[in-house]
Amino acid sequence: MEFKKLDSNGITVGIVDERGEISAMNKGISENDVGIRTDILNNIKKDIGIEMLIRSMAPKVIISDEIGNKNDISAINYAICSGVNGIFTAHGTSMDYLKKNPIFSEMLEMNLFQRIIFLDQDKKGQIRNIYQENKQ
Image 1 (tube, rainbow, N blue to C red):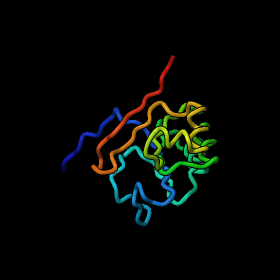
Image 2 (image 1 turned 90 degrees about the vertical axis):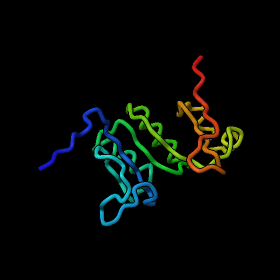
Image 3 (image 1 turned 30 degrees about the horizontal axis):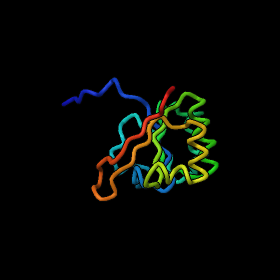
């Protein structure tokens, strides 16, 4: 019998996968390797899923994609106030684009993000720009 050493330094992660695009769930099993310490809520609205994860799974980090409405703002703020970090994706091409979008503008004013990363649209997986919170 062989044993594999498990990483004991990992953290608990919760994924709210509203449309199954992150985990690619199939019959309750993630087709994508999202880690052994990851709980996934599939086919549930982000704001409800974020609250459920915080209340019942105690994640250190919550991941969700395509944020961009008022309910998402409240849920992300709730997570931050609960001491949970987040990784969220959204569609946007530049900081100017985000500042002109009323939802993102509100999130930026609330200082909900420590870092914003823009990916290169032409080179898959390549980072184009990184913006970090300016703590004064």
